[in-house]
Image (cartoon, helix red, strand yellow):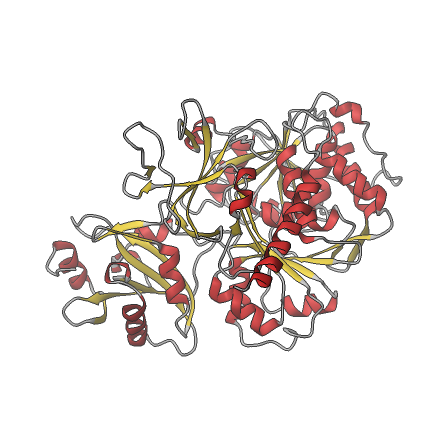
Length: 599
């Protein structure tokens, strides 16, 4: 890199970071300024500007605030008080953000329930929220009907669709009466609250089990929303396209904050649709969109679309964008600015890649390291614990070495950690006595590496990385290699137990598309991966199961393993004698498990 290029890069990084720090500078856990105050301030400044477009509906900032006030008035009518919680169960729609903002206006927390859940998982999330009231719609009522047991308390469902048929435990929440919109509830109703109190519960995706409810204090909601209002530098002329679920932080806090705190218009879609994406972006003249990495992969898995280059997009921001998708997205769409970031809903480790370096999740240059209490520590894959030195302290990683990312827990807004509704789960995420006696660090559960220039790269989730033949295998890195092979639409990599062998062998669930050639895939992985990292087993299926935020679910795949009796899908093994992928029959499965083959 030339000196001038390095200067230009650092200017982009520092200016982006400065915008973020400026917007979050006044956030204080002891303050009585809450997230609803941020919202009301924006509504006062941009009152008649269009705040939201959704399925033909248009709301100004003033109208969106009035809708939030109606939800607050409903809550007061039910006798809700500060410290209570209401569950919110519905897909993206115009009422979603006003519903939880309205609750915060009266000091009530909102539990944002994944609208794709049914049965036991839905019962679990509703129960741990502590809520007795559920704000929902016709879709949510249908999902609730699948619950057979497991609820901790009786629930009353308040349905906002006026024509929905109602059962005994369901009531209509009429958002049109009284005809005169209610006034903002007096701030005295929340006078005893501070920004460290809980505003929301946002649930983990549940990729490996039941979701956990992360407690989102007002400070954390403000950090996400204000930070992205600064990072994206939106203004009242911008239109931000959001097809991500509002029950999760990337869409519901980062995307919403970037739009609504700066006077921009949020163009909201009920659910992501690869076939409608470019038409929507063009029709609404959107200038930016918020993504999860797999959303962009879905777009790039489609043949080139007519609207890919005839748009007004100036920026995309989000997380999880893989390097090969990043470069293709830029080449096909002409998009010149992408902001990739890293952050967990409940954690205190946040990173930004303002430089547009493909594959990097963020950067901390050496000259700014003192401003960030983030470290990478050496990690024992088998024990799933950080490595300790003879004195009992953690060992920092060398440049280029993979380790767990941790963040120092403190009392200010940036370093705070409020944990989960489950105290035991909260404590599991805390690493104590890491570098000095008495310190406490948040464990991200993510393995990363950092290069000489300060860029961070995601390696894998702890638990996804596994050991085989005495070596550590990153499922993410293997999946990226497989995904680059022509004819592979999606690849989900994980480790499975094989008989009495130590460690776990690699397995890849693959969704093929036109041109997929299984023998050629083997040649590709042999060429691109070391022997220990090559997937020993292949599972071919028409679609990969994901969470509502497009994260791959692995728990069922690991449970099925490579047993043909447990799945209807075709399974293959990289046969050690034939040196090709061969279909697994019950007989071959038995031979593998008995140790008849040297794998």
